[in-house]
Amino acid sequence: MNLVLRKMESGNIKLSVVIASYNGAGSIGRCLESLTRQAVPCGLYEVIVVDNNSTDDTAKVASKYVEAHENFSLLSESRQGVSPARNKGISAAKGRYICFMDDDAYADDCWLERVLNAFETVGPPPAVVGGRTLPYYTTEKPAWFTDSLEIRSEGNHARFLCPKECLFGFSESNFCIRKSTLDEIGGFSTDLGPKGDKMIFGEGAELSSRIARRYPHFWYDPELVVYHLVPERNMSITYILSRNFQTARCYQAFESANADLMRNAFTFVQCTGRILVYFFCSILCVRWFTRHSVPDWLRHAIPMVNCLSRSLYLIKYLVTPHKK
Image 1 (cartoon, rainbow, N blue to C red):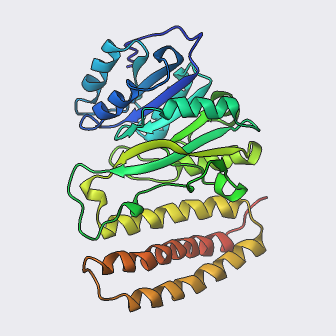
Image 2 (cartoon, rainbow, N blue to C red):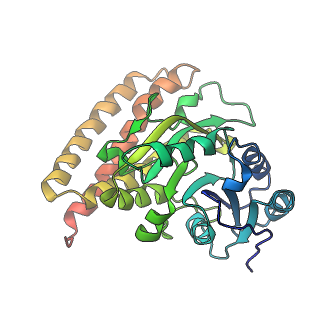
Image 3 (cartoon, rainbow, N blue to C red):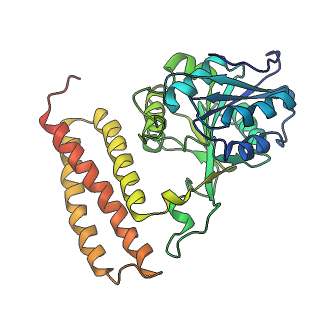
């Protein structure tokens, strides 16, 4: 079923915010509320919520905002996964620029104003615009857990990303792209991204890598801020290391596809050496699991896990024939 609970004239819309949601009833209200307070006039932007087979009250919560705000709409996508849901929103979007947010995030009041300013005033014209993603919490953090584990930032100054940074792009919850670029390049890979309760990473990086090959201008603005929920289940050492392992594997896949045999072999040797260094350093930090020692240990364990993930991927990649 395709639910379109509100329609707008498309003539003046410049920005389309696409929010894919699966069982997001507990957080999507805060997300949508932040989008009603934007400094940009409501006639210049639309908000598209795509309900992805939610079994809770996601559609009910979103419908209240659709009924109250002419520039809000609600769609449904039956194919499970955040990528098909976002692609559904892309196809329905009327704006020149499409902004992606997660249903458990909320935007600074000037978010869309700064996005629009970047697309229309920065030169050369960027294909992609992004900013900082900062954490917020609804439960108490463990004593050892620091905000730095969840901050997604490219520094304190506005700038274009370097070519390697463009391959990975921005956090999917603060990720804005020209509609014309998406029409040409295509949307998110439906093989990647969370599917219901199954966590799969890499959909944003994969899309960024495709865009960067043709349009390498990615603009970063640190004042373009979105706050993202860190649920209690994400504040565990197991989750942090598992997420970094999966993310590193995705990133290495994109790098390997754009590198020759010698470069991949050098990366493998480099990663293998770093595993030993980080492992040795982590052993020296084993005053384990006191308030101050866990962050010190993670400072070495996370890059060690990243290098291990990359090395394991490269072993498989290097022994498998590839067509160029």
